[in-house]
Amino acid sequence: MIKLKTPDDIQVMRAGAQILGKAHAEVAKRVAPGVKTKELNRVADEFIRDHKGVPSFIGFGGFPFALCISVNDQVVHGFPGEYVLKEGDIVSVDCGVQYEGLHTDSAYTYPLPGARPEVLQLLERTMDSLYLGIDQAKAGNRTGDIGFAVQSYVEKFGYGVVRELVGHGLGKSLHEDPEVPNYGKRGKGVKLVPGMVIAIEPMINMGTRRVVAERDGWTIRTADNKPSAHFEHTVAIFADSTEILTTHEYIESSYTYKWRNKSR
Ligand code: MG
Ligand code: MG
Image (cartoon, rainbow, N blue to C red; front, side):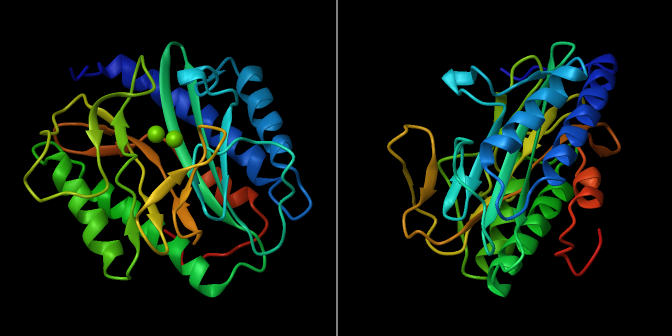
């Protein structure tokens, strides 16, 4: 069942999304070679609680951390821990904030200095596919229009679109209907209507789309061990417009390695 949001709900989610964006920025300031991923989790967790939010992921399905941190061939749902970031890595940081009872969710994949050009290209194109998906997230369109936009763009480059994990509605729960796959057919799927709030989150693999679960039962990684990228925004659908509630702006102003050639 799809739960539509009121203008008041969306106003609260805007405020939550600001906390989320700034929590991401605290992480961005610290992403560098030599840093343990558990330190990134610590600063995000602390920042969210200091700003009257609750980390959405803690306890969600039993997940134990504020952040999902997925490095290199890990796709999503990685555990923060003792891993020390090194030159050439890419690291996906996914975070959710519950603020006044409503969730927002966003993710960003950082390249560390030394990441190969083809890996930077994977990241840039995955980010582009997120915005192509968002362009299709408008009232009257269907979830298949979003999936088609993402899939048709990234598959041109020979990349694999992860099927097992998808975007989602969100609000009082972190995951609500509808599912928002990153693949699909134009004009198919659930119709988008004003008041829907959805997370769009392409997970794009450099090689095969196939993924496997690691032994911790959570971490998903690529079956061929090639890198994977993940970018996510929470968006609200209105009758005549769509608003990106979450933001990567604070990340991009805080992260010292300026890896992108173009600005959005
Ligand atoms: Mg997320
Ligand atoms: Mg999500």
